[in-house]
Image 1 (tube, rainbow, N blue to C red):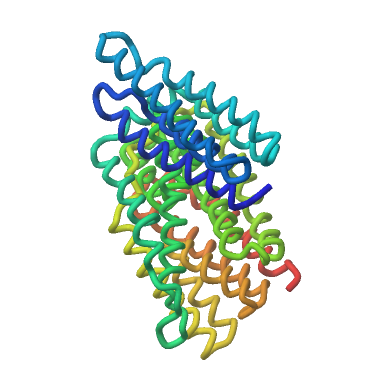
Image 2 (cartoon, rainbow, N blue to C red):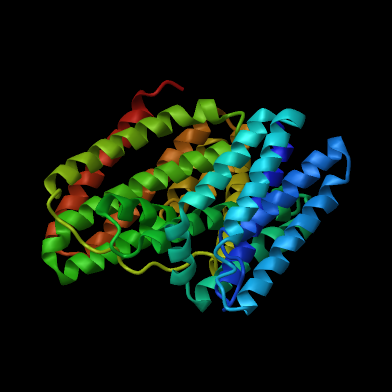
Length: 413
């Protein structure tokens, strides 16, 4: 399967959904969040087929699409529901082209396209609910994410600057796009499933957006209503588990060749935290609560703050490594992990990928940052939460820190 073709498909779907989301928010539109991705996929498939089987397919597809749009427009102006049948007719055209793609280009590629189209068609209600749930500020933030990822990123220089040559604007901003994208995916899930998302899902979404913010929110909530302490401890622990999932995702993206060496000890830590979360779930299985309002992470200010923090961590890591060797990395990790695990995770993984530090030092630095983050979040709970929440979170975090310490001590270098 051609990775470039998969990338083209992903971009096609993403741009189609973005434009469809914007169009669905306008009155009397003939297409929305499902129709526009199908239109973009139609164009992508036509171009792929035309590249190897004659360019006539592209204008033919354009003419067919134009006929559909004109028909829908005329039907809408005549008072009938012209937009309702457009998705089905476009899907029928795409299915035909997928059949051609299976024979002419790549069967696996056609399967990916077909599966993507099936998901778009099946999740009609959640997608429409998401489009209707976002407000003007949310839409503005999504457009800002497009600016961050598709406008700013491509024009940044891919060259190292600074005393140690570690300040590469393109690579720093690429990590910003990754972190904001992960947070935005959690926010989209929150908008789709709503405030009444289940406890486990609430912790997952909160961890994707920000485990620290989730900790602050539920600490305050439990302080106002002490009966929510069991539920709050569970959500905070689940969000902390998901923060480790984020760490693994970031490691896999930043250091794909080193992932097999870095992931096992981090995976064991994640498994230990999941076991702790399972115990908390058993103790609070009869509790229920709504998920608090979440903030959209696709804003300029958090992006620039993370870029500055990431650049600072890169400089600190380079300085510590130059003056104190690999052990200096642990000190930077401990301080950085207090408030943010993403920056030290990405910098440590990239150092391991380039062979500048050993795999053992890299994952130990990441795990040290995770331990510091647990300590910081317990401090937040102690400052803001109720006594029952402090006891439950303190016990669960103590077990997590014990597991992390055991991994650092027993795992072979």
